[in-house]
Image (cartoon, rainbow, N blue to C red; front, side, top):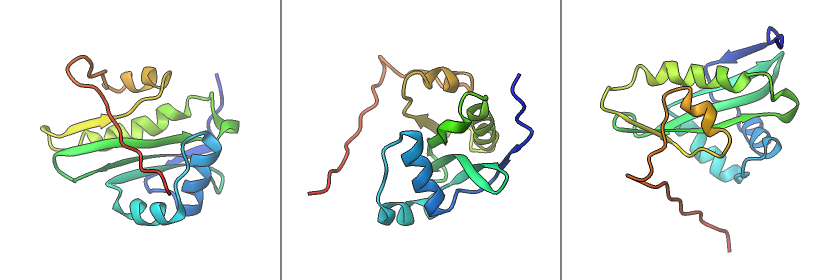
Length: 140
C-alpha cells in the first residue's frame, strides 16, 4: 500500500502556469497560454492535487452549467503516478457531479487504459448508440 498522506486535494482550478506544465509533463496535448488564459476561468469546477506546495495533478469539469458537462484535464505528473491519486481526483469530481441537475449529461473522452478508471465512477462507453468525435483546429 502506498502512503499518500503527503498529498491533498484542493477544490480549485490550478493556476495557468501549473495547468500548462501539468498538461505538457503528463503527456496531454499542450495548449497555448492564450487558450489557457481564456478557458480556465470558464471552468465549472476544478481540483488541484497538491504535494506540499507543488501542484502535481488536476482535473476539471467544463460545460454550460445546467444541461451538459464534460470531465477533462485529468493529469498527474509522472513522478506521482501509480499511487491511486487519479482516483482521488475522480472522487472529488464525482462528488461535484452528484450536485448537478439529475437530467444533466456528463461526458468525457477516455484514453485507453484510463477508461477502466472512469468506469469505476459510473462512466460507460456510448458505442454503438453514439461515437465520440472531435475537431482539432491547427495553427497555420
